[in-house]
Image (tube, rainbow, N blue to C red; front, side, top):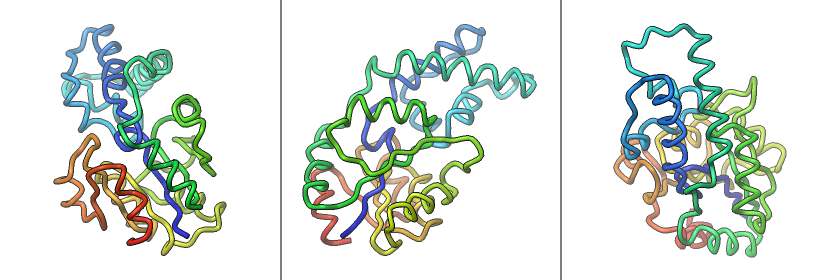
Amino acid sequence: MKAFFFDLDGTLLDSLADIGNACNAILEKHGYPTHPLPKYRHFVGNGFGKLVRATLPADAALDDQTKAQLVEEARQYYGLHMYDCTRPYDGVIPALEKLSAAGHPLAILSNKPEEHTLEIVQRYFSAIPFTLVRGARKDVPLKPQPHALLDMMKTMNTSAAQTLYVGDSDVDVLTARNAGVISVGVAWGFRGADELRQAGADHIIDTPSQLPKLAEEA
């Protein structure tokens, strides 16, 4: 029986507008240029701290403490507005329901802060019996480092050969590769099929409805 581990933003949830709006609000507050929302497709994926830092002007002379404060402000703003525009991608919930009904263990591993990850999964996927849900935690390396994924696999007693990691970016493909599991790229996400192909994804799917069939083929 295959176990499915999922990235969250850009894979299960279309959350780009809320993430981008949170960062832009803090940039505008401090007098920095904002960014068009589509540009955030390439900012996200490496954790909230790197996201905020990537949006700052290259010539912004800020010390680490000031940058950390901006990250915290954006994190707090996002926590208050992460349901404004965010929605599950069409077809995601039925696909998850089919996988669960077929007996496949399901889990989520995101680089989103864990408190936000747990809250938003409860909001949108309360009916899906995920075995584990993990976000970014202190002292645990972020994806693409494999530590968190390997720890979750151990807890769930699933082998690498029976594990699929599903995501929308090269970070997710690298995470799967570093953990020695099967990588599945979703073309509907933030980054698109070209990046997933170049990263060497084992499988690329165009719609969530392909996930149950992939359980039999991968």
